Amino acid sequence: MNSRQLALRILKACEDKKGVNPLIIDIRKLTDIADYFILVNGASDRHVRTIADGIVESLESSGIEPLHREGMNEAKWVLIDYGVVMAHVFYYETRRFYNLERLWGDGKIIKPRQKHAKPLKRTRRSSVA
Image 1 (cartoon, rainbow, N blue to C red):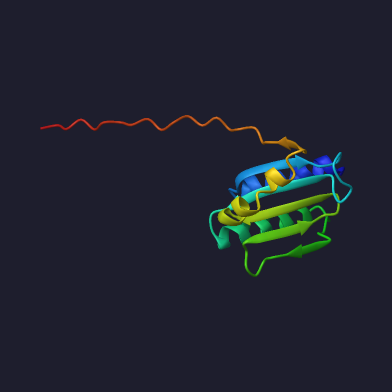
Image 2 (image 1 turned 90 degrees about the vertical axis):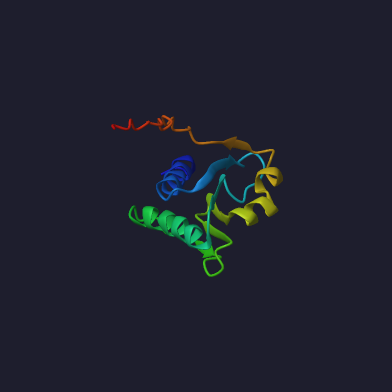
């Protein structure tokens, strides 16, 4: 599995756990610390842990283990390092504060395709007298 495929697999795992605002930043032309960053946030510390666990479990099922994982106790910013791809799972306020999208803004941002959901239709109940 190449680094792009790994990044897309991590993105899928984030989406499966209902991660909020997931995106991939291609940093290959900016640094050699990794090829891609995955950024996603959760709505609570429990949600952050769930997303992070989902990433690890998804890749472990294919025999891919993280090189390093940190931040699970506080669950404000969980970093999962796969060498060529680093997943950053944030609590919303932490993501907004550190704003890695701005910090790595020279990288190519790859947003997932939006799923087009039909809006729910309001139905009126007719009252029968």
